[in-house]
Amino acid sequence: VQLVESGGGLVRAGGSLTLSCAASGGGFSSYPVGWFRQTPGKTREFVAAINWTGGSTYYADSVKGRFTIARDNAKNTVYLQMNSLKAEDTAVFYCAATSFPWGGRYSSPAQYDYWGQGTQVTVSS
Image (cartoon, rainbow, N blue to C red; front, side):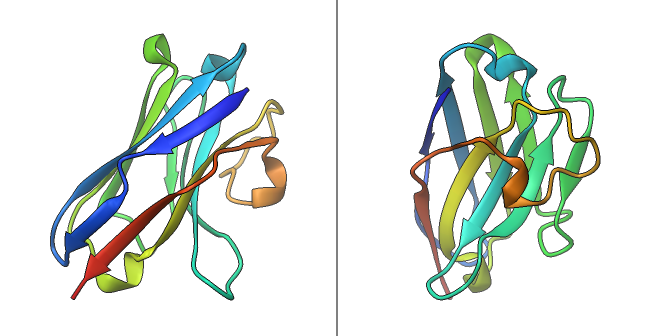
């Protein structure tokens, strides 16, 4: 499975962006998918995750109520809608997929087999 993120960019505080994670290769539609973010010198941070049906979603407390994760399995794509962006949301955002049904919140980077290359999100204050 290969993952490609898109949709990052520069936005003012309070603005919105939608990130996309497009997958190629078999099996993606049956894999849980997560979004993580990372800033220089820090470890990769969980943002949100979604199970394979899209029926269960999980969020970090820092983004709950502002970000929404969704998927379209017919398009092999997972989205992250980000509203009310803050300067502290500035980071490289990565999507990841796992072929193992861990259960739980899928909030650990160690649970994921496949990673995209990342897309930069910069929020100006």
